[in-house]
Each structure stands twice: as structure tokens, then as C-alpha cells.
Image (cartoon, rainbow, N blue to C red; front, side):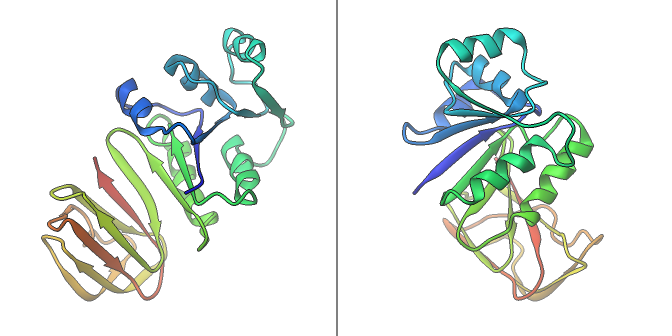
Length: 212
């Protein structure tokens, strides 16, 4: 699997070891602007740093320059966040999975914008996850198997007005051909009870949030 780990300029919640243990040797590491502060603190050398570079402390910038890290600068005046611009670049590079760190927590407006980016970049040939030590968030548009998450709490939140044909198998609260309505709390706080649980929907889009 071809995977990229993207650090963005949000709050990196949790312990350093969680992130260091998550990253594999063959993962590509990319920073969106101030996300470079996180890799610097973790002692990681990113493959690429992109953005308008206005959120990187001089100490970090100089360190990575000396290490020969590639920089790609965007104009400061732009209509999109650095995260969206980086994702637009990555989408065309045949990755199977994009993991985004530091997307959850911190400013609420940025957190919500990052969640909406999951829908904006929805596609069948790759998967995007927002991950912290405390939760994993991804978009569900058809079906998804959840493996080795027994007894974890999981919530499902509709992005579209309705999500129809919802089947939950391997959960404490099973559902058969249910309908989730945006604004209702039917999908909150379920519990995974099987080694392999399954989510299926026939129409709509929803967020799946697994509490780690």
C-alpha cells in the first residue's frame, strides 16, 4: 500500500510515541506549512514541505533547509487552506491512503473545515483519515469493514441530509436498513463487538469516528 502521512498546522494531540509508532519506514512524510513544527519536535525529516510558509518558525525553516528538505511555496494570498492545496497535489499521485495528523482539536473552524475536506476529496481509489491518539475519522459512502477494534466506541454522523440503507453488523447496537438524518443523534456512541465489524449504506455520506 502506498501511503502518505500529512502533518498540518493544527493541534497534535497526544503523546509523541503514538505518532512515531504509527509511521512506517516506507511512508512518505509531507508537511503543510506549520505542520513542520510537529515533525521537528518528533525528530522526523519530511520529504516535502508545502504552503505559504508563514507559519514555520525560523529555527525550523533553517533546520530543514540545512537537511536538504524540499520546499514548495504557495502565494500568501489564496482562497484555500494549505491543507486543501496539499491534498489537491497528492490526489494525483496514486496514493492508496492519506493519513492526516493535527487536523482535530485547536480552532473549531479549522477542525470543521478539515472534516469537510473528507467529503470534498471523496473518491473510490484512495482513502483519507484524520487521526489523533484519541480518535480516527473517515468518510463512509458505501461499505467499510472495521478490523481489530473490539470494544471501541464509534459514532456515525450524517453529512448529507439523509443516509439511507444503513446496516451495522458486529456492533452492540445493530441496525438493518435504517435511516440517519442530519441533526439526529441515532448514530452516536455505538460499540464494536466483533473482530470484524461491517458498515453498509446505500445512499448518502457520513462520518465514522472511532474513539481510540
